[in-house]
Image (tube, one colour):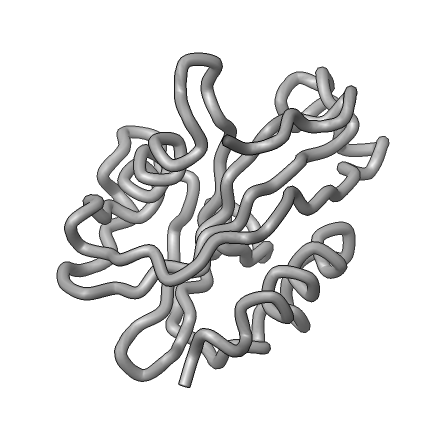
Length: 156
């Protein structure tokens, strides 16, 4: 059972998918130059793992049997959405996100960014483990640092 997020924060899942070369999946948000790990909100009726698998499928086209869960964060990681863009993100209802991170090993299949009619991403790359920390938008950097540090010992 995942703890409830602090008031004002939306419960969210984020996935660090890695391949046999220990490269991690990094995706570019459609119509932008912003890159990030796949992530998404948890619906009211979902448990955290169901939400992770749903988001993984919607955003990058992977099914549960195509990945194995290597680890998940011990707790939630929080970031604030800058006030000047809050109204564009989730209608401005939240000041930020409370994320449960999953480290997933890709065991089969291909990344498919066009599974949904309105895809979130338009490009992806397999990058070195620490690369995303230097390329993600500033307001997510601290969360990325915490997640990568928590998971670093799980990769060879």
